[in-house]
Structure formats: C-alpha cells, structure tokens
Amino acid sequence: MKILSKWIYLIGIASTFSCSQPDPIVGTSEITKWPEDKKGAISVTYDDGIINQFTIAKPIMDSLNLPATFYIITGKVPGSGKGKFIGRDPQEIISETREFKTDSSNFFERASLIAFTGTTEAEDYHARVGSLFESGRVEDAYELLDEGYEKLRNGKMVNTGEVVFHNNVEDTTTWEQYKSYAAQGHEIASHTVTHPRLAVLDEVNMLYELEQSKADLKKFIGEESIFSAEGPYGTENERVMEYAYEIYPTLRNRMPETWLEEINRGSDAVPGESKKEYVQWQRGILTRHSFEDMKSWIDTTLNHDNIWLVLVIHGVENLGWEPKTKKQLEEYFSFMKSKENELWIDTFRDVTKYIQARQNTQVISKLENDKITITLDSELDPFVYSIPLTIKTYIPENWKKVKSGDEKNLEIMEEESVRYVLFPMALGQSTTIISE
Image: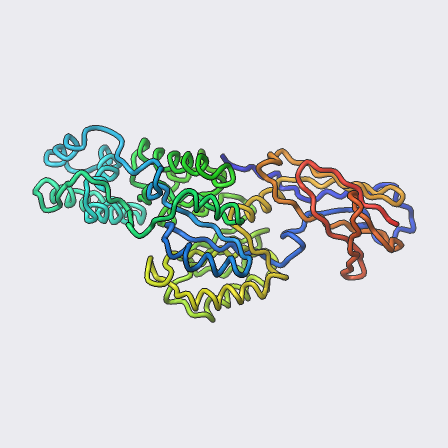
C-alpha cells in the first residue's frame, strides 16, 4: 500500500478580519513539522530479535522511558510459521543443476532453495549470491550458485533436510513476551520469517516470507505490529519494494515519497544540505563508532528542523553483528534522553504515521469574533493514523487567555512578535479555541 501525498498540509482560512488586524496570519493554523513543535525526531531500531537486545538494551531504554522498534525474525519464535522452501521437489531441482547452468530462467528458484538444504554453508551461499546480485554482478551470482550446487551434488555440502536458516538457539523470546513489550510502548515488527536475501527469491517464496511474518505478528500481537517492516540486509531492490509495499504500509528500507530525502546507512551524504521537507537519516550503531561519532548525529539533528535520525542496532554485548556494550548504550541513551525536550523520540511506526499524516492532511481554520474553529481534513484512516498532530494556531494580540474546546487552558507563546498556541488534534476532529 502506498500513500499518495496531497502536497498540502497548511490551509489557513481566516474570516471576518477588520482593517485593524495587526497581522494577516492571525486566525490561521498549521501542523507543526514535529509534535510539540520540536526540532527533529529520533527512532531507535533493532534488527534480528537477538536475545541481548531484550535482556540488556531494552531495560536501559525502559529505565529512561524511551520507546524502540524491534524488527524480529518471526520464524524463530515458537508457534510461528517456520522457514521453508515452497515449490517443486528439491531433489529434482538439484539434479537439474548438473545438466543446466544457472541463468535468468532458473536463478530465483535455485537461489530460493539453496538456503533450505540443511547446512549453514548453504545459507551462506544464498546470502553471498544475493549480495552479488544486488550489487549488479549478476553473472558472478550465477557462477557462485553453480558452485554451491556442485558441492551439494558431490556431498561436500551435506543436505540434512533440516532448516537452519538464520536460527540462533540463544534467541528464546516468546510471543507472550513480545506482546508485553508492545504493551509497554515498543514496536514489534517484521524482519521476515527467516531473514533471506529477498531480492533473489522467486515470487512464491518472497511472498511467503513477507506474508507469513505479517500473519504471525497480527495473530500474536495485533494490528499495531504490521504497519512497518524491514527487509533483511537493508535491501532497496525495486522488485522487492514492489512486492513488500503491497503487504506493509511502510518499510525502513525505503519510503518513496517526493517530500522525503533518504540517506541510507552506507551513504556519506550530508543531511543538512537537503532542501526537502523531511530527511530520513539512517546510521548504524556499530562497534567502530565512538561516543563522539554517535553524539554528532544527534547534534546534527538538533541543528536543523527537518531531520529524522533513524538508528539501527544489531549486536549487543557479545551477541550479534558489530555489538555495543551495555555501558556504551547506557551512556548514549542517557545523552539522547537529555535532549528529549528538543527532539521527539519515538518508534519508526509512529514517526512515519505523523509525517505521512501531516503531508496528507489539510487544516481549515476560521476566525469569528473570539473563536477560532479548526478542522482537519484527510483521506487517511484515522484508526490507523492515530498519532495526534500538533496544531499551531496564531491568535489575535488582544487575546490574554485561551481555552481549547475541551476547556483546557492553552499556553500563549510568541515568536517574532506573533502570538500562537499549540495543541494536539486527531485526524477527523474539529475543535474550537476560545478567548476568555
């Protein structure tokens, strides 16, 4: 599912102005770029569902009341649909590799099967073949796949018939635990069933990886867990994106919006140079990064008004890729927490919902006498896009006290001699602010 931007997020309709009105924007409203008119946003995300993420990193974030997004490999969780090859008899496919070299006509089927032939070496062949394919070295990918199947045929890579695809026996988190984490405010989301190279799977196996993972998340946790997903290895393959966006509303891999600049983890692009409305700036928190490196990412986010810093973590302590220690995470998350008054820290799902809702919502604002009526108009589903939007409404100079429609007093603020109030509104709502 793709969100189509309307390109309109601000419409101020001010009526019954007299000639003595001090400023033409009085009575208009807008949706602030970030909640509470903050300077930027941060999402902390974890990949692979590694046990130390939940026993070491999560408690640190909980102690600081910081939410996180965990992209989990659902096939590892007891009770889920497991990893499997879907298609013709594997022995038939393996036998054919003796007669016919790999080419475009059989590549996806063979690349799908090899990871499920029962050894970690076969899984590694699948991953390396996928890496070559995604980097444009297609003929090299064919050749490497032929090498792997030759080993299978000659017994040098034994086919045990057991699935070991991306499975770690230390990862013992249950669905009951995941559901409790979601209830605490964390996002639990899909990282597929087995963590494959989606770009080299044939259609039926790719769909299984995406759809089965979604089905289990919905069954065991609920609708809130199936909004965002992350295709393994950070894939940006166009074919994968086409399939995945039919299943998930948004992906951390890519968000193809005209108003969004995306800087992936491997890019050296400078986020502050982008002129787009939003910049999603992904950085991987790795062993090689110092505290000063990671601190500079937050400082950069603070120095602009359009940056969404998306942090990606894999290893924690002695488990996972490029791990960070407990002490390092404590120091970094504490620094992040100290900037919470200026930066919005929330899950990948909720930040996405806010910015997509802002870009696809009109604000209609009408001033009459001592009342300003504000209405939000959007075609988005308010039950899905349930994150309240922050409304900034400019008020007349003579208003000394302001109440919202629910009788709450609103703080009057000022910038460049213009006075305004901030308050939250949900999609589909209409409210009135009143001068006392």
